[in-house]
Image (cartoon, rainbow, N blue to C red; front, side, top):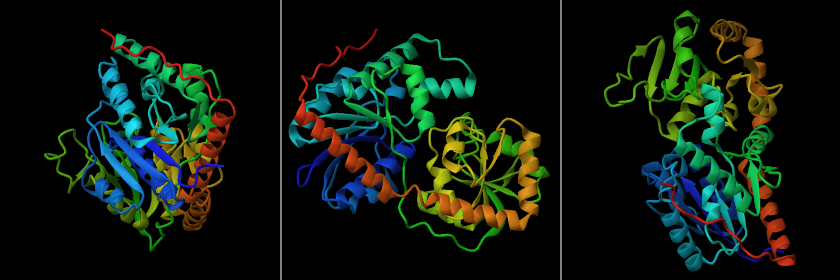
Length: 380
């Protein structure tokens, strides 16, 4: 059995969806009487992000200035990160370490280590640009990802599709397990309005929002996009349509969910997506889904969405136009999306992780292995 009040040390970053995932999971674990120490790497959490953790009883937040691995591909900050994390383990004395990154598994941990694979530069590059990055710093990054996966006691991915991608790219010695992400039950559908919603930065190659701008003027309904349309968001005129898109600017998560509750259709033309928390939130809010025909989206949303080639403008415009003009189909897809979203709840994710932690701790007690980590050095 697990200890009565197990202590979990969990890393996270506040840059993207990993923060929502980590806070949601930490909240569920704390509800189950776990004590969670959430350690941030990279840019510190701000505003709404901090408020999200302040009300979680049993959660301690440790903000660091350690570099995220994809922002430090040469690994220059890795030795310092390993030292800092080792000191944190001594102070917290966790029963288990849950890392939402790869290379931090190389620290000299005493507790069993779980790595959760959410994304990686190699898979992003292959999906967005073809091939793999050739620069030397990305070779170092890939080597550290490989070493981190090998050093972990177990690793998980949020979808079978992404697990297969990680295994093909990095060849970890053990196969990963699949635990889907989940969201809380506070998202409700409401009265729908005649517009299509998308989310992402215009220049983000993975989200592929630019293609929506290329078809927006030829659609019966407007496409509203949450996110900046220029690198300098402060100078972008986010009140007017740009290339046919109605730019509504960067929104807080709560405000984005309100937009989803109003939207009739949510579209994602992403070319890369290991899971897609935003799609899950849109489905829970009762949007009909039009999604890229990616293995991940097929795995998660088969039978509950319409799928398109994300690089085919004509197909995307045709499918969206058909859905706008076909109310019975739209209502059916809204119902199907909400029903499918019910599979991916925070409670289900919390149950799955708690069970997985229990199996890891049981295995460690049965056969406690010596902790042997790869040598951690910054590369020139």
